[in-house]
Length: 478
Image 1: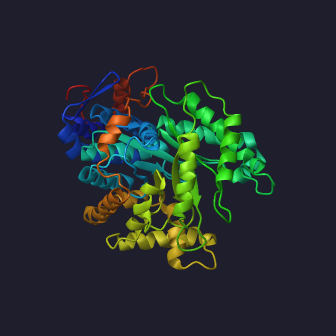
Image 2: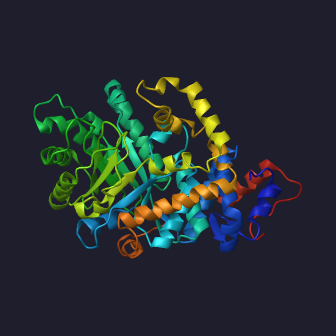
Image 3: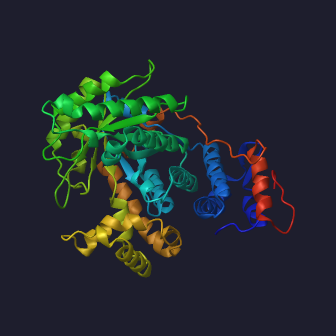
C-alpha cells in the first residue's frame, strides 16, 4: 500500500489525476474512487515522508473540491432550526478515530441510504494529547471517505472540544490560552469549521453569587470566540458552541445559563455583523452506568437558549455514555445536537470480527504501559474501555491493516448503527434542508511548495525526484 518509488506513484496517478501549477484535475472520477483513493489516504496517514504526507492531504482536499465535496460550517442549518424554519431534528456528532476512514465510509453509505445531511464528524481534541491524529489527518480521512463513496455535498467537521486545562491555567493563564488558540488555528486550517469551546472548568462554585461563579468562564470564552472570528475564512462563518459548566452535583439552571451569557456579552468584542455563538453545550453527568438525562430540564434550557439568545442546545456525556432510550424524544425537547463520543469506538473494539490476536496485543500493551490508570473498582472491561484510546497511535497501522473481510463485517454494523441514529434523531431526509441553508465555498489548504518553487506541480516533481525510480517522471497528462 505504501508508495516506495516515483514510478509507483506515477502509475497510481496515471489516467486518474493531473497536477498543473496549483490545480488538480480529476481525469477519471470512477477510477479515483475504485482504485486510487484507498491508497492515497493510506499514504497520507502512514508514509514516512512528512512533506509527502502533507502533499497528499492537499491533493485529496483539492480532488474532493473538484467532486463538489466541501468541508464547511453547519451554522446556517443550525440557525434555521433555531428559528423553526425547518422541522425539528437532533444532529449527531459522530466521533470516529479508530479506523476513521473505514468508519466514515460506512457513515456516508448510511447517509446515502437515509438521505441524511444534518450530521457532523467530531474530532476529539483529547486525541492531540495522545499524539495520535492531527486535525489535518482526520479531515483528510473524512474527505477521502466522501470521495470513495461518491458523497457530493457539504461535509461538517467539528472540533469537539477545545477545553481549558484548569491546572495549566492556574500555572500560566497566557500560556494556556495561547495553547488553545494554536489548536483552533490548526483545526481551521485543516477544514474544521465547527468548533466547541469548553471554559467551564473555570467556573468557581466557591463564590456566592452566580454571576461571580461564571465570570471567568464567560470572559475566556468571549476572548476565544473573538479570536475565531478574527481568523475564520472570509468565505464562511465558523459554527461555535460553548460548554456552560463543568460537572457538579445538580443540573444547570436557567439562572446559571443567563449569568454565563450576560458575562459573555459584557466581555465580547467582535466586528459588527459577525455572529457570536451558535449553540450552548450541556454536559450530562452520571455517577455510574449511564449519564442522567432530564428531558424536561433540557427542554426548558433549550427554550431559554432559543427564545432569549437565538442559540441552539447541544448535549454530550462525560465519562458515562448517554442512555439511548430517550433519543427519539430529543428533537421535540429542543436538543439540536448530540455528541456521540464513544459508541462507534466501542462497537469496533468489541465486535466479534475484531482480530482477536490484535485485541490481545493491544490489551497486553495497555497492561504494561498504563497500569496506573486502573482504579480499584474497575473491571477489566471498564479498564480497557477507558484506556484503549491510548493505544490508537501504537496500533494505528495494525488496525488499518486488519484483514479486509474482518473490517467489512465490522463496518456493516457501523453502517447499521449510523442508520439507526439518523432515523431515531430525525436527520434522515435532511439533505434538502442542508442544501437550502448552508452556503458551501471552497476553502483550500495552503498550497505545498518546495524550496524556491511556488507551485504544487514543482513540489510534486521534487518529491518524485527524492523517491527515485527507474525512468524519468512525467507530470501532467499521464
